[in-house]
Image 1 (cartoon, rainbow, N blue to C red):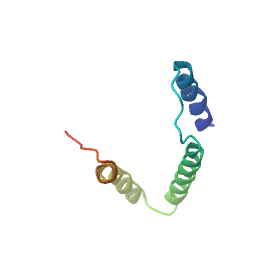
Image 2: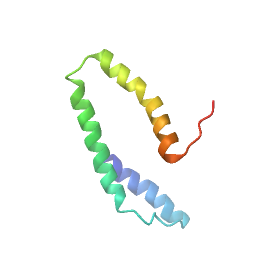
Image 3: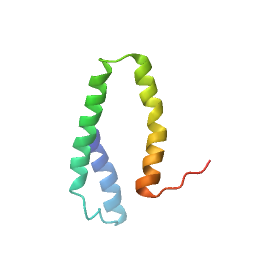
Image 4: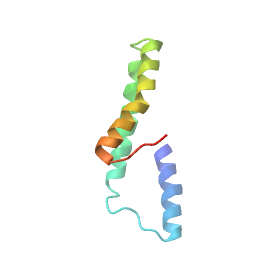
Length: 79
């Protein structure tokens, strides 16, 4: 439901402004399904671990995303 609302409001705003949608719009539903499945599996995995492990994994997300975005997207991070 969340992704349908995003499509409705954000896609509608883009069309209202006269901006075209991406050429590769067909990949967005696949990414939405992958995101929903990943969130489901993460929440499901929480029942098999302790709160300490969950906290450490959640805190490690930010440095990993920064490192991956630097490596694959060429982003330069500053303070």
